[in-house]
Length: 155
Length: 155
DNA sequence: TATTGTTATACTCTATAACTATA
DNA sequence: TATAGTTATAGAGTATAACAATA
Image 1 (spheres, protein in one colour):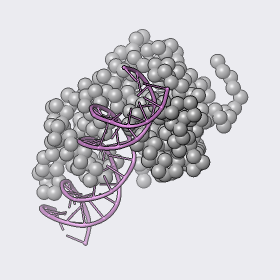
Image 2 (cartoon, rainbow over the protein chains, first blue to last red):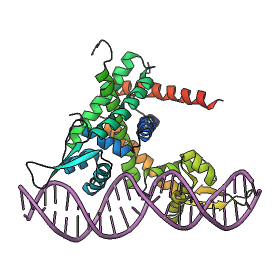
Image 3 (tube, protein in one colour):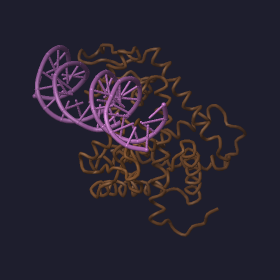
Image 4 (cartoon, helix red, strand yellow):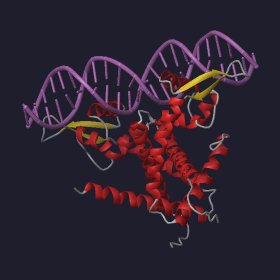
């Protein structure tokens, strides 16, 4: 296909723009299905993280990229709705482990299933090799970012 | 390369998850540079819209997908900071036209330039062919989505 | 002393409902 | 009456700073 020489300034702009648009496309899908299940995006993110982890408040704050005080409120609101529970850490008297409740799991799984179906539909027109190329690149970028932040994005 | 048989259910989940993480990574960059210029994402969006338009409050609400009361507050905060200005419509005594100030224009252009530089840095470690694959796929998806919307927009 | 987590406070952002002024 | 916009109110989400309890 296109065999360009070097990335020009307008290439950079166009690429940054394309990534922003793509990000808004994906977050739009997430928001749509979260809202359909009575969740905000950040609440959905919280429940999604807890699907396969039981982090402390501190770990949760780092994973979500929030201040610990913001995380306190976020988890408190989710707990008030019965979606998560804080349990004292058995090894550290200062810490709490945040668990997903059955109700929370049901809600996030419903939202994720709907989102997943939507993603599959969006990806459907892509030829196999192109789709593989997308996830190769995305996987590398996420791995690099995880290393940068010293957390496991994929447990 | 990986020559897998067919997309399994867990592939679909992992892929949808990866896209979500990637979207959060990109919007995180957008937010970071907006924030570095003292702007929120929605404020940046507001200023971006006003770069080439002078809509009424009502039109602005529709463009941003917000309730008109939300738009009142959004514009009021931006106006208080000298980033935009409301001027009475010459044709409708009830309406105001929202203008971008020079300060607002400078701010949004600065934020965009910094975001662009950050994207370039994030992409830098990717081998050329991988990066090309990413933008091939993203370009196709955005084109497909644009087509979808055009079709939807035609009654 | 350092870390974990919460509280107090303040701000942005958002929506619903009620309101004013103009068309 | 209908439309444009604001105000009042309520709540989520976020950060900073000060704090308590534990390590």
